[in-house]
Structure formats: C-alpha cells, structure tokens
Amino acid sequence: MAEGALPMPSILSVDVEEWFHILDVASAPPIETWDSLPSRLEGNFHRLLDLFEEYRARATCFFLGWVGERFPQLVREAAQHGHEIASHGYAHKLVYQMTRDEFYADAVRARKILEDASGTPVVGYRSPGFSFTEQTRWFPQAVAEAGYRYDSSIFPAPRAHGGMPISRRAPYRIEGLGAGLVEFPMSVADLFGKPMCFFGGGYLRLFPYPLIRRMARRVLAEGRPVIYYVHPREIDRAHPRLPMSAARRFKSYVNLASTEVKLRRILTEFPTVTFRDFLATYAGNLEPAYVR
Ligand SMILES: [Zn+2]
Image 1 (cartoon, rainbow, N blue to C red):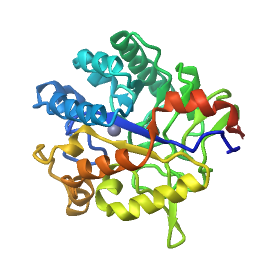
Image 2: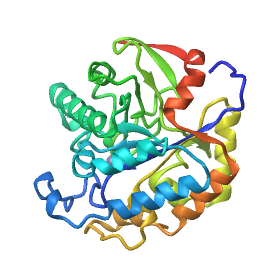
Image 3: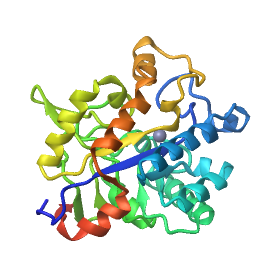
C-alpha cells in the first residue's frame, strides 16, 4: 500500500454471534433450535462494549443477521456508542456450502435487518469462518451486488474451513468482477517461513502476548493494518460447551481467560479504528487488483 500521512492504525472487529455458532462440528445446533437455546450474548457483548469504552476504542461489529433480528437493541446500542455496524451474514453458513443465489439472499437479508435496527448504512461484510476460497470465485461480485462496499472474508493462510494462501496480504481495491469492493485479507505474518495469524479467535487466545505484539509490529512495519477479531463468547469463561473432538475443543476453548487480558494490552499499546474509519482515511491509497 502507498504510504499514508499517519502512522498505520490497527482495525478492531467483533463477530457478534452466540456461544453455539461454531462451524463444522457435528454437535452444532441447527438454526430451527437456536431460539430455544440459552443466550449468553447480551452480557458478553456488554462486557466488550464496556471494555472498549474504557479505552475509547471503536470497533466494527459484524453482527449475524439472526442476532440482529433477536436483539435489535444491541445493534442500536453499538451504533449509538460510535461502533460500526457490519454484517456477518444471516444464518452463519460457510460461503462454499451455499450456491451464489443462496449466498446473495443470505447477505441481503442480513444487511436489511441490520440497517433497520441501526438506522445506518451497512457497508461491511465478513463471511462465517473466512470461507471465501478458490472454490467460490463468484464471491466478490455477489458481495458487491448484495450492497456492500468492503469485505473481510479472506484468510491468506491454510485453515480448516477456507483459507486462500495465494491471496495478497494488504487490503486492495477490486477491479473487474466485483469492481468497487475493497477486500481486507485477515492479517498474517510469517513465522518460521509460514504465514500465520496471531490476531483473533483461537490464534489470539493460543499465542503469548509478547509474540502477538512482535508480529503486530511486523505487520504494521510492512505498511498493513493489523486486523484484530474477537467473539463475545471468548471473554466468557463459563459459557456452555458443545461436544466435539479433542482437537476442536482445544481450538474452540483454549485460554479463554487470556482474551480480555490480551485485548487490554492491545488497546493500551496500539491505536485502533473501525474498517469504516480506516477507509475514510486510506481508501485512496489502496492498490487495485484485477479479479476475473
Ligand atoms: Zn462467525
């Protein structure tokens, strides 16, 4: 990315979903049952909002459309506190498990629910599980057609669901199919010659903070924003667990107690902004990439 006038900020984001919105496990409850399950969202999301308030930080909140429908007051509240309302789709489905038409319908439905609840335009999209892959080349154009202006669905490293290791790393402006959409690949840095993420979900919980900080400084020094992401369930040590294999249990629940501590250190040491605010400053500096 071309050099900006200001030091590169980081981007703070939350995927606003319930404790049971875990992908690719057999025990994940079907959508028909979500209404009847105990909710942990309000308490956990409020804890996150309070934490952000303490540091005067603003986040992009990628709400699941289903969540926006059940808890419109949470969407409103986040917007009133200056956070950006964005979309995580409606039904928390992996992109590559939907047809283009199914994806489009899900993405439009979520955007409308969230715009109604917040009274603000919703221009950002992030797919469940960063599941834009080589299999779904139609994705950027469908996101743009569904009314979004930027996307945060690429994981430029190998990953269980999704992953697109060949992606460029810096945010870029799409030309060709999906023209006008800005793509923000998730932040990765090389460790032992391999691209790795250190900045969200299980990765943020797993790695020790000094390593996260070192890798964050490296990404910023390369002229890219560090994109952080958390889920409300990750600051809730006591949330119910879904049954799953030992390996998945480790990824889903390791070091839950460390999330808040690490977030506090990040917010103390790094200036963070929302995607919307990042674009307001840097949209003109993004390099174009031709998609066909
Ligand atoms: Zn999700």
